[in-house]
Structures are given as C-alpha cells and as structure tokens.
Image 1 (tube, helix red, strand yellow):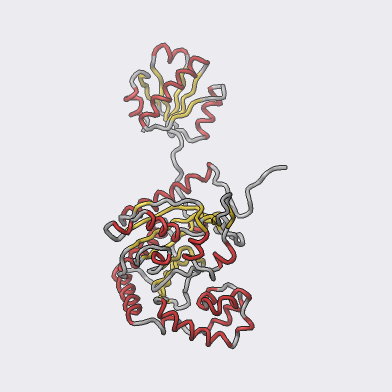
Image 2 (cartoon, rainbow, N blue to C red; image 1 turned 180 degrees about the horizontal axis):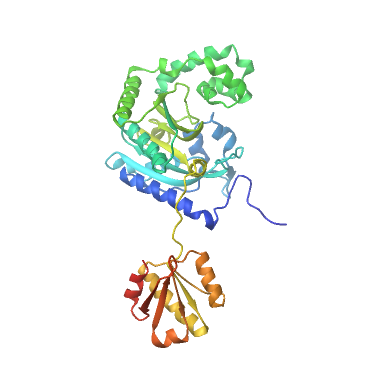
Length: 415
C-alpha cells in the first residue's frame, strides 16, 4: 500500500521551490529595511505556553492544537502560532535586558487541526514580525506599513486595511458586561462553543464563524464606545501615523481577532474578501508568560495564502537560474575530467552540471536545454589534448573559445 502525505499537509516539490525562495527572500529584504532580525524557535513547546498565551477559550486551544504526551509524560504541543514561542524565547534569552525595542521576524511552520481550505493547511507556514518594548502607536503603524508593503511589493492590488482598538483589560471588562447583557436574550440560540465563551470571554463570540452566531451579533454594542481615554488617544495616534504615510484604512469595530492576548490595536489586511494578514498589539502577553511588564505588537502572514493570492492575481514569480554551464563529455576519461572541472568552477559561485547517465552528446545537449543551462560545451579526446574548448551560449548559439587551464577566464565567460 502506497504511503501518502497526511491530510492537510503538502510537499514542496523542486519545481515549486523557486516560488518559496522568491517570497522568502523578498520578505527577508523587507524586514532588513526595517531593522528587524530573524529568530527561530522550536517546532514544539510546552502546552501551557499556548494555554496561557493564546487563551483557553480560543478555537486554537479548544479545537485545533496538536497536543500529546512525550516519554516523560509532559504535555507537548506542536507550534500552533508564532507569537507565544517568540515571547518565550525573548524572556528565556533575557532579550528584555537589551536596549529596546527588540525587533524580530520569523518563518515557521504552524500546526492546527482544522478543516482544510485553499491556502490554509493543517501544517502551513507563516511569516511573522514581533516588536517588543515600545508602547507608542508609531510602532503599530510601522508594523502595519511593513505588512501592507509586503503585499504591494509583490504587486498585489485590491488591498483593504481594517483597524480597530479593543482597549486594555479594564476597558474590555466594561464592554464584556454590556455585550453579555445584549447576548443574554439570545443565549439559547448560541452555538455550544459560544455558550462556553459567554462567561469566560464573550468577545470571542464576535469572532464565531457560525451563521446563527454572526446573525445574533450583527447589532451588538461596539468596543470603541467603551475604551478609555488612553486607549482612544493611542487609536487616534495610530490613525494619524497611517495618514502621514498615506496608508488608506477603514475602522471596523467588529474586528477582535481570534487570540486572547491582543489589546488596543488589532488589524486585518483583506484581498478580495479574504483575510491575508492579521495582527495587533499584545501589551500583557510577556508578563503573562513570566517576563517583565513590557508592551509588544506584531502580525502573522500565511505563506501558502500569499502564494495563492499571487496566483489568483496572475502575478508571475521569476524562475531561478538553474544551471550556468552544462559540461557534455564523450568517454570515461572526458567524464572524469569534466567532474574535476565542474568541482573547480563551482568555487567561482557558478552552477555547473555534468552528465552522470552515459548519454550520447545529442541527449546531453537536449538535457542541458531542458534544465535551462545558459552555456554548454563538449569535452572529448581533442579538447583533452589541446585544453581548448568552444563554449556555446544557448540563448543565441554564439560560440567562444576558452582555455581549460585558465579557470578565471572560463568563469568570466559564464555571465
């Protein structure tokens, strides 16, 4: 019986690798422009990290985590999102003792047991940015600007930025009471999950995807009417900075995001009615996980969804050059020499390939063309004796004579 990839997972085959390289390199360069450094955290963490950080009433913790006991009977969870592990590493590595802010980015696989969707797999991948140490709305605006620029740099249009403020815990306590008063009359019609949220975290009900719950919450009170002066000023500052940068946005008081650690700013970037990026501020997560009181803000962007968006927008990703030179050979002695020559030319950062299948010269040239070799030449008995070879440029067929003993000259010809 053939063993296949598990449901909700997908192989990245060599023919698609260039797309991932292109996207990742572009995002790395963008992060560099903002002075953001890379962090890498383990694939699995203590389950408690996500329960305390993400929140016990979230769908992620209640329904979607891959959790198991290891051989030491410890509860372990595959990485369910990127922020909590980054915060854990920030605390454990004592990065809070450095000059602030600390700016981090990551590429990471994320594991969630959920219904498989286009661009959303049970193992998918995220690009994330986290900035620790600053309470100012200027950081929120900078993070949002990076996320917007990421999609714009790839040529994606029809982007809509929606923002909201969900205040700090004191604001939400007042709002939660008002929300519960509103929901109480329709409590019996709520889905089972939202009934469990009613007491612990009623705001999560606003994020429910069940149709009947969405209908119930359509006319619910909005959080912006309950945030304090400080949170309101922060939200006004955010809008001021976005306007300064010329970034268009819409205030959507129904945005709460699906994770419990958010406070004040939350935002989503939407393309053709699909959320392609989301994030916000989480000023209390660091202390909740055991670190000092320190503000933070960040976002997560799904790589599969980004690639799908580029495909739907008919944005072509340039293919990588696979081969600078293919060395054809005739006979065992020539093959041995071509192997030595390829070994030396690769030291000049050239992509060199040779025949390993004992094909005819015609078949070797056909293969060279198939893999997109820029140049080819043939080594036979004459070339071995004279140490001269004619290099063929595949794009137009033009040929150049080269000295096989002069590696510098040979490498310079392969442009």
